[in-house]
Image 1 (tube, protein in one colour):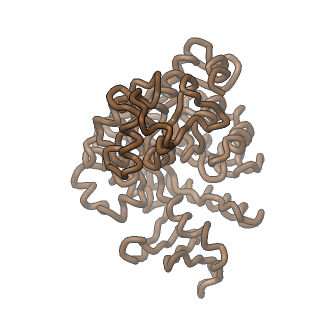
Image 2 (tube, protein in one colour; image 1 turned 120 degrees about the vertical axis):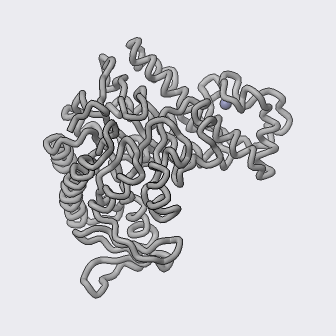
Image 3 (cartoon, protein in one colour; image 1 turned 135 degrees about the vertical axis):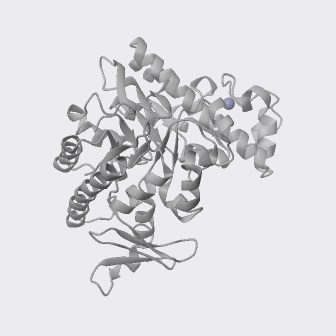
Length: 407
Ligand SMILES: [Zn+2]
């Protein structure tokens, strides 16, 4: 469903790669793409308020359905008109489906305790929490109060309707890394059914929305590096008529090369009128260039701010940033303890414009809250600034040249 309140327009495509510069128009403003979305897990990008985010060049934020559903709960957020008014963010917003967090309870660390429960369904104990996946949905135990919840495709749509983001995600069952071929196929088939149910419920909810508001539902492309599956998955999204496409799970991960390989499998199918979001894109600039080169328009990444809070600050090439050091440097290193100059020679973020590297070093090793904020501002600004440089380069036909300068 295309809608006058949501559309995507490509301004220019790169001549050599699938990189493209464009605009996503949402009811809460436009997103110039390719763009980075900081993650406001619990309706806050940790340590940053909305003015920090805007000053650091952010255009959009993504919040996690799972966390907001459990706390503060849907009733409170509904009363505010959505999570964006709740956190006083005026711009475009995204929510995920909750499936990824639920699958975290369900799959990884607890491999040893996989067993069959009385209903014959596979379940996993994870620190006392049990989650179960059936065709109906994913059942999980809240990490906050131990209450049992069922996240079905319909429920995910209803929660995301209340959270009121401009862009929302269909519920999928992410593929676990340790899945057998049989289990991968099951999860893949189930995801197609869940996406269809998400689509139906989303359509019903759309008819109830206030005039002038619209939530664009993205279908989740799945199948990992299985060419037949990922192509079938994307074809299903296009035929069904989702307004946007998201790549997640195994497709987009911490390994930029795996991300590249999987996106290459569908590059000829990607349409010009639907934006492509990479959920949880891993890596720094090296991963971003690979993704953008394959047509990714927006992405979120929690590690950008998480790394900042541990003292890992991004480095421009002018400051020594390169693939080998993953474009980052630990401000906790003692070599910074008496540096009166800013951390970066070229960065014009609030932190680098006002404070010395020595002060940042001192704040971070002392565990001071201001240090976490200044480091987060630098990293968010850095990625937003890189995205701006990438947009300009695509517009000028210089994308490959920019990539060569960086990578
Ligand atoms: Zn900076």
